[in-house]
Length: 226
Image 1 (cartoon, rainbow, N blue to C red):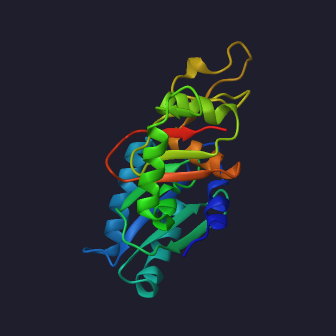
Image 2: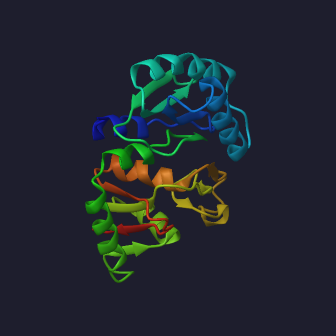
């Protein structure tokens, strides 16, 4: 099973443009493997608004046949970015929904979901959501973005699915949903972030915190504060 250290290593990778492909694919797929991978990549490109590098596409399609042979009846995650030399395939211990994501970081929420005990995850989320906001908890995406931007967050609860576009201040690194929330008049443009949820996840892990991924259909984002 993939370890937290391996997930942290992936989550720490970062590029300026959304050029990192994260592909989650069931092995073997019900249809042609290359065709299914191409469908997921096309969906990722459409969501991102730009195509992936052709070298990455070639790398991924060449890597998939051995995955199907070596890890049948499992979900395999493939991460690729020609600019950084990243090409890694990770088998998961359970079947997860197929998806493709192009971003500035690897999409690691499914990896965290694959290794967490579900009953404990639900209880952790329920405990944080039951806390009074404004004290030792933050509830809702704007409040959690502010909390993660301000400093280390011990525990973050995020949904398994969904991407939320936002911005990172080019001066102080503050995450927000609106470019106008970044530091004004410093001559540094706000940087677009394809998914601020994934950015929060990576920052919390880098700071030594815990991330709980929930699958109950709730879109709530919450955090336990220090």
